[in-house]
Each structure stands twice: as structure tokens, then as C-alpha cells.
Length: 80
Image (tube, rainbow, N blue to C red):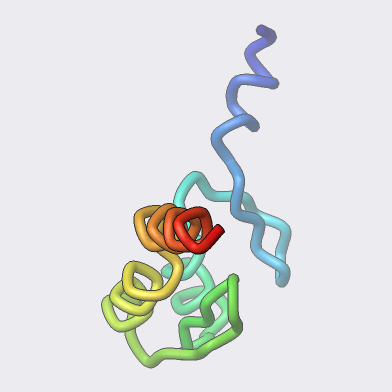
């Protein structure tokens, strides 16, 4: 794998304002808050907004976590 491919492979989250890329969603959100003065955190799955990153993280764990999706899939399978 080329060096350039390897470095961009981990930069998954792109700032819509300036195009800068980040490895973690938390880094992108911190960048947006500090550089672009966006005070709200927005869930990228359902567009719910939160005043703090911790509140958004709790929301994501509760409503969008991998374990929740797996358990919902298991429930559907059991219903068949």
C-alpha cells in the first residue's frame, strides 16, 4: 500500500466548511466548534443536536450502537 493511501485511509471525517479531514468524529466536532464556532453537536445518523459532545455520545450509544442494531436484528429473526 502506498504511503498516501495509508494516511488517507484513516481520515474518514471531513469538515464541510474547510475540507480538513480527521480520523475521529470527536476531532472533527472539536475542530468545528473551535475553528468554525459551531456550538451544537449534531448526530450524523439522525440529525439530533446537542449542546455537548458527551450528551451526543450518550445518545449515539443509546440509539445507534452496534449492540442495539444486533439485538434488533435478533428480535426480527425470532419473530419469523
